[in-house]
Length: 181
Image 1 (tube, helix red, strand yellow):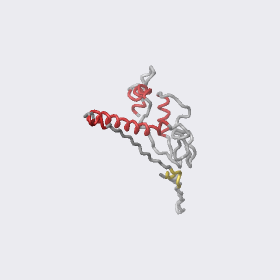
Image 2 (cartoon, rainbow, N blue to C red):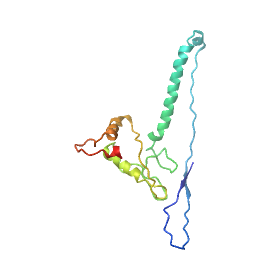
Image 3 (cartoon, rainbow, N blue to C red):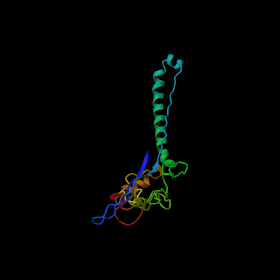
Image 4 (cartoon, rainbow, N blue to C red):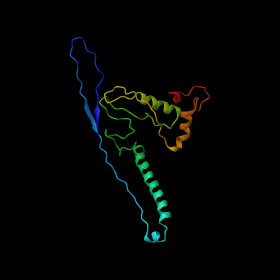
C-alpha cells in the first residue's frame, strides 16, 4: 500500500500570471504479511464406538470456536499492544504511537508530549491534538476523536469522563465539555 503525499496550500495568483504547479509524491510504502491460523481436533475410534462422539464433538467444537475467536482478537489487538515498541514500525518507520511521525511538513505527533493517565485533562489534550492534525503537506485534515480504546482498568474512569453531565472530580458545577463536544 503506497501512501501518497497530497498538495500544499494553493498560492494566490495575480491577474494574467501563470499558475504555479505542485508535485504530489509517494511518501512511503507499507507491506502487509498475511497469516493463516488453523487448529483442529480428533476423536479416538473408541470414543466413536462407545457413542461418545456426539457429546465430545459438540463440546470440542465450541472450545475450538472460542480458541479461534480469541486468537483473532489477540492478533488484532497486537497493533495497539505493540504500538509503543520501536520493534513494530509502520510504513513511515516509527512506532504507531510516536511523537515523531515524519512528513514533508515536518514531524508530527499522535501522543501527548508527556505521557499521562486517563483523566479529564489528558483526554481534553489529546482531543485538541487530534483536531489540530495535519496531512503530509501541513494542511489541517479536520480529524476528530470518535472512539476511546482503553484497558479494562480504565473502564470506570472512562465512564465518568464520557457520560457525566457535569465535570468530574471537581466541586465546580461546569458542563462536561467532553460529553457535549
